[in-house]
Amino acid sequence: MASAGSTLPRPALGEVVSCVREREEGVGIIDIAVRSRDEGDRRVVEVEGEIDMFSAPKLREQLLEAVDAARYNILVDLRGVTFMDSTGLGTLVGGLKRVKEHDGTLGLICTSRAVLRVLQITGLDNVFPIHPTLDQALGA
Amino acid sequence: MNDDRSEFQVTLPANASVIAVARTFAAAVARTFACDEGSVEDLRIAVSEALTNSIKAHHADEVDAPIVLRVSADAARLTVEVVDDGSGIDPAIARSEAAITPPAGLQEGSLGLVLIRSLFPDTEISAGETGRGTTVRFSLSLDPVPAAR
Image (cartoon, rainbow over all chains, first blue to last red):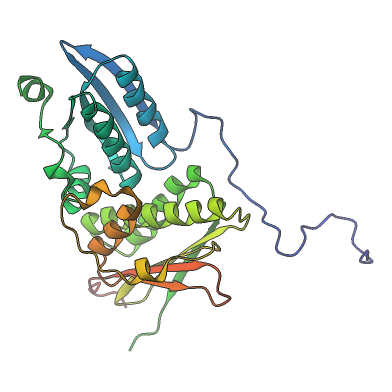
């Protein structure tokens, strides 16, 4: 039933008027950059930004790419990561499981207090080798 | 007893792209109440975890409703609530203690709640009044602000 006296369309009761729009992939709210390169027999995956449910697929993609390319010894450089939650941890664990199927390794380079904290709380600091620098990681 | 209470609330679509918005919002409110940076960092993690769980629940149940993030503060505590409209959490999981025996992290599913409970041991997880939805609530104590009034 039309209400008298109003010409403007109104949102229905309960309708969500969202002010956050879907972003195109790659230009999301989160800045994340993931780059891969080879250092000797290691694949170094360098991550910058924040890792959560939205951005973790970018990291997962690069880990899968490494395994597809038969690069089973991976170092994930997290020194540029300012935030990581359990989705990020799950992504790293997923990568570790895959390289282990090929007797590979997955080590982390990490100095950030926030990232080390979640690794320690979850006990994953005992699962991943963690190095403070790339040189130490490559020498390990 | 001081009953001054401030409440801040955002309504978020169930989309992973807004998790960053949620934790930034919670961190900004916490800083307004002079939380130390360590607590702000814990809050950012817990808010991300709670939002991630809620978004997964909404997606799994094809719920189109928004998720509410509420941060409130009185003189003593800052409280965060994440209210969703998913089909609810398994009561056994909701009750379970944050017993972490490494490598508990290898069981990916429950890692988010483990993290929230580790950071905020007072975390409460309750079912919505209508049998749908889950509310995750945790809080931290605020240092008294000298000469605030």
